[in-house]
Image (cartoon, rainbow, N blue to C red):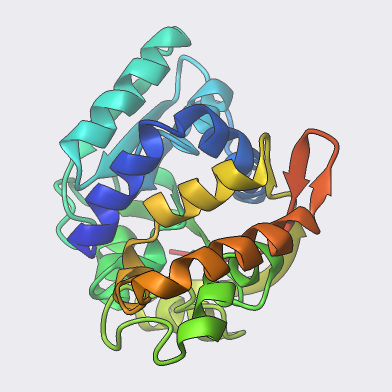
Length: 273
């Protein structure tokens, strides 16, 4: 996984904005959990789990006879996940610091795997999914969730506004790309290449709602914008006042009461070992 995204992005997001970021991502988490269909007694591996979702939500469903392992590169993020699970009294939840491309588990260790907004940032997604294939039991599913197109309200009203002002590349070529699997069929390709069968993929629309002000959501967007940092660094100081004005005007188009209702387009994909 790209270390700059896998650690600094989510660590920043988990601190100042942890409650509101969690609220914004709740519908996405629910969509992945519904798609994965965890059952009582399952052993589940959640890759790139960060501060613990969807691992915690799944642990609440698999029951005392099941178990969920939350895996991430960042020990700091996993400590937050461990604390959140403890607050909920979950005894069927554990964490593992490791690289998704070198899983420290025996073959046939898990009945289900999930990955929420992580597959896009693996250095070698096929290699990571081959590792995942190895540790799953026969018949187990791997369920992935990735960002859809950049052309959607949250991104267009924030980073899209900046890009329209400064031009040049939106993202640095060859580096972390949140939209790597937005093209229909691209996640299917890596699942097939990793050896999964009965692969499927769909793009869905879910709620993506910020419970606060336009100023807050714009500050949060910049705080978690590691893949966009080269573009942001190109902005001349004299241009920032106009950009702030235009971004806030764009965000206000989605204000509904006390919330900002962007909506989100995400890709769900799965395969069976």
